[in-house]
Image 1 (cartoon, helix red, strand yellow):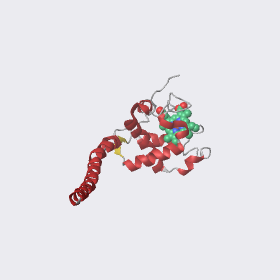
Image 2 (cartoon, protein in one colour; image 1 turned 180 degrees about the vertical axis):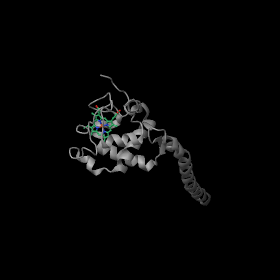
Image 3 (cartoon, helix red, strand yellow; image 1 turned 90 degrees about the vertical axis):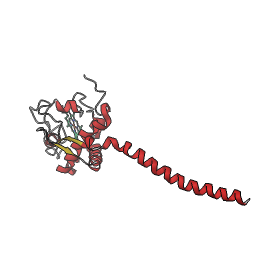
Image 4 (cartoon, protein in one colour; image 1 turned 30 degrees about the vertical axis):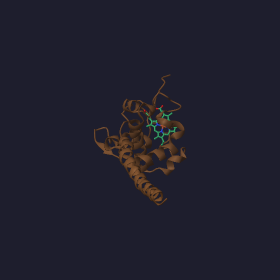
Length: 172
Ligand code: HEC
């Protein structure tokens, strides 16, 4: 009886040691793998059209995602543009606009005074912007830093989500 009890106690003691150890190992190996999509390269995007770049923190991108989903999600969920599928938020479409919109500074400019795709005229009266916050009331809550975080999210999202961001685009 006594040896059985002792070995049972030993078994329990061993599992008490093994379980936390296994969990620690799991965190060690799964942790970096899960974090890999948020590494510095992923978080680094063009800052302006002149070639400067900026590295966001993961926290900033998550805040940007939240603001984006709240303020822009009704029309741009997943990086598409519901009412104009040809002008999505994917990097290629942003890059081909005049002037190119695939940088933080250009996106912030756009959200202050959005222009037609060819850059010819303002569309602030039909697209949310700081200039048209009298019509688009959600824009009243956003300041310059919020716009910067939204822009960061728009540029990091395709690097994390790949083709799913603004992808599966259909041309009409
Ligand atoms: C009411 C719907 C609606 C909302 C809300 C909206 N957008 Fe848009 N967005 C559009 C439409 C429509 C276009 C295409 C405009 C055009 O014809 O050039 C567009 C275009 C854009 C473009 C240009 C894309 C390109 O490839 O050139 C950007 C950038 C953009 N929106 C960002 C935002 C952000 C950021 C928000 C939130 C602050 C937002 N939009 C909110 C409808 C919306």
